[in-house]
Amino acid sequence: MTYHHRSKRADTLSIQCIFPAKSKPIIDEIDRVLAQHYGFTDEELDFIINYDIKYRMGRNSGGDD
Image (tube, rainbow, N blue to C red; front, side, top):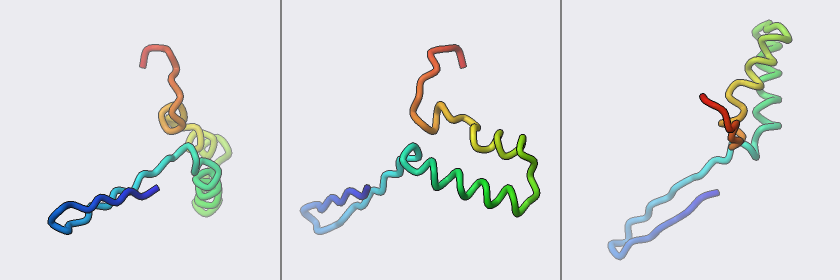
């Protein structure tokens, strides 16, 4: 999503927002391809895919962090 703001001086400010939760399937596929290329184990790939998932997906754990 991109927002554009035009000021009275004709300057334009563009802000691009990225929502990782919406891109999760694509990011996971990229991780799988890179893991295969670098010879990661299934355990290493699982760690990468699930690393900080509650923050990336916008979930609150409700526990102490």
